[in-house]
Length: 435
Image 1 (cartoon, one colour):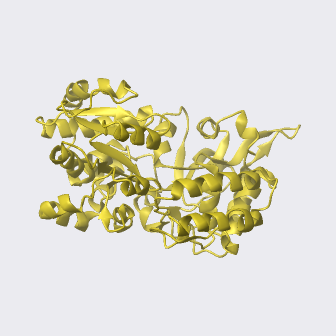
Image 2: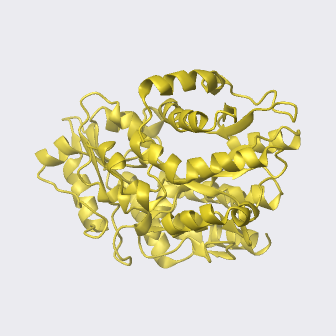
Image 3: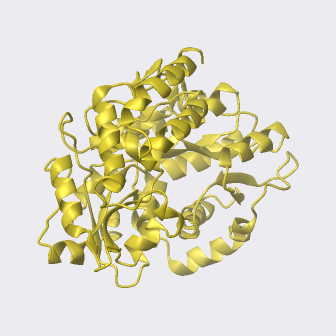
């Protein structure tokens, strides 16, 4: 059921002021409000309010206080929880929640699911397994997924049409590295002095993860196994080839900005202003691009490498977790049931905030209506089905630090991707073996 604007504004007034609070205050046991900690840009925060407002309408007995994260949500959560002010409901990220689970910060939701068998049955029947299972770790279920946030390509319709290029409409049809590079070359234009006027490709994600995703698209998983892995695939030849292809887009082929050039402008702005034809990112960029004046865009699949099996995305997802020491577990569970269940996911679908995680929501008329500008809707609706999992381990923060140091020279063009075999792989594997 759609939330009427008047009701939304009235309820949002009750919970909206706290969105401005960057820190968690007054969240001790003597406070009767359910605290919800999450990270969002302004457009996403507004969309979140629709979900919270509808929950408040259906559960007026449960007050919700929202708390916006700063730039380092993991550090904030550790600080809050160590100080005895852990929020009741926590946003969880696929790559980092395991560290919180291992430290006892997150509640194992299996107990709540066992107590609520009817809801558990409905949820399992409607869930996209790959997303749900992402938050299962060492026998526990530490969050319920709320969105699919994997990567794909946005493209400027006018630019591609003018060049006579038609990108894939779905993940199955796909395109390869060679065709992608040829397209990016055709879409990169320069003035007489050689300065780029229009880029063929820009990346709005995190470069070393994007490079790794190109490695994945060359037929290699990130790690083995993906849940609680003991070995990463940074030394795999196919992974290295995919990473090198990504680095060469800027350093060798000149179809993407180099890291040095990115110091002076934003890839988000380049695409929004029509100065880039293809942009890698996820649905979290949707609201920003939708608000860009005169930007006519659609979405398409990532390219697949010669050793892969077509373009793949990543199982990027965020979920909702409950603090293990929350004094409001029952209220928190009601919020999770709503936000991650059919009712809340329907609101999310209609708002266009996220790509929902339930079959009923992602295939709903509401989700379609919220994305009328998209012709290639299959890229979103079947994205999770054409995605490979990211590693789930409590040691990932240490692996991430190693990745940042080792990928940097490769992405700057001062080292070949083959250096990952000796510089990164042994250290990352040691961290995973000794976690």
